Length: 150
Image (cartoon, rainbow, N blue to C red; front, top):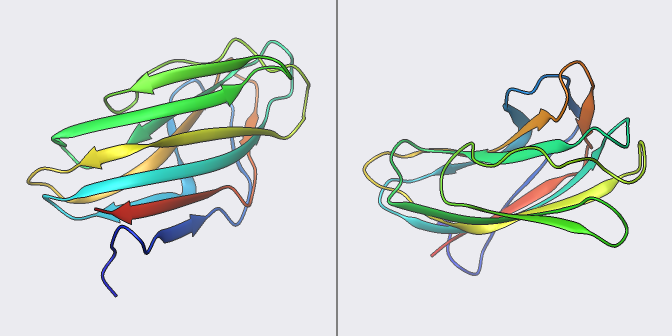
């Protein structure tokens, strides 16, 4: 069945994904195949943990070569009363949050946006890194994404 605005494609991570490096890595299970010359809307809801109050996380997106445009809003809580927002207009943008308020507490992150592909098809994917080399951060199993084709 063709993907359309009202019929989302759904992905979900089936196991935890961990990293202890500050280089962005693709999160297993949180990717979508995109057609060339197409417009998409995407929404990811990600549960993550950090082992320390001073270790942040870095979320970004990767995707097909040379999209016409990408516009994404990343929302990452850093405490019970503060949220870090970032607007991304390209792949692998941004940097880590300054830290998270509670160690090992499951914390939600939201990535939502739109992309228009150009001549190249490819894979839209969530990318993730630790805010401190050698310190393991985790994307929890059950994190998910929705993709709508306009």
